[in-house]
Amino acid sequence: MPLPGVGTVLRTLAAPRAVIDMLQAMQALRVARRDLATAPTGALLPLSATAESTGEAADAGLPVAVPQAQRWAQALKRAERYGPWRGACLVRSMALHRLLVANGVPGSVVRVGVRAQATFEAHAWVEVGGVVVGDRPSVQQQWTPLGSSALQGGDGGDGGTAALQALRREVA
Figure 1 (cartoon, rainbow, N blue to C red):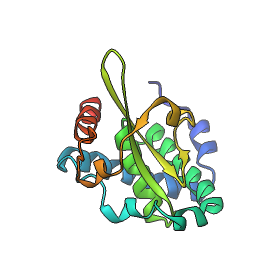
Figure 2: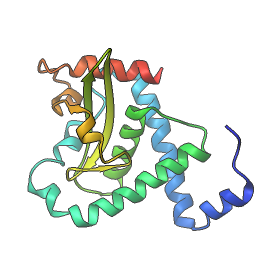
Figure 3: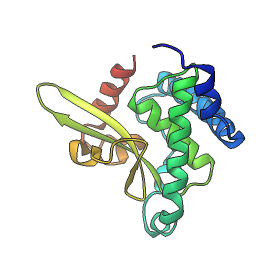
Figure 4: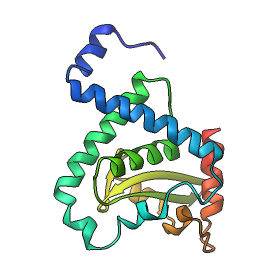
């Protein structure tokens, strides 16, 4: 992939806030890649982080949370474009979720969905109060979400472990 011109980079990063956000996103990508490589399946996200996305507390902050979440999703896209680290869907989702939690955006949850066509496929994305952030809005219709327990350590017989292993193969 050709490197963007200096003018393009400067225009994209003209605002100091955008630079700081992008640097935080680069760090989140680095940490997510490390965590995916070293954490046992089922221990990728802390239980308390996904618990925030349930109940009315997540819905109460939705009008403010979605624009903030979109800002961080943009920062993550810039970090991938201009930074040294790239990530498949699970790495991006983990990084975005961590950014949202670290910056006080309520209602963030990582979803893992599956579909079985000719082969078993899995995809990860982030939702804030039920709104897809940083991915295509149609992702909810294209994939069948697994229960969030798959990311909290419990397989529950829903194929969560197989889905996470499939996502890890995609990243490798």
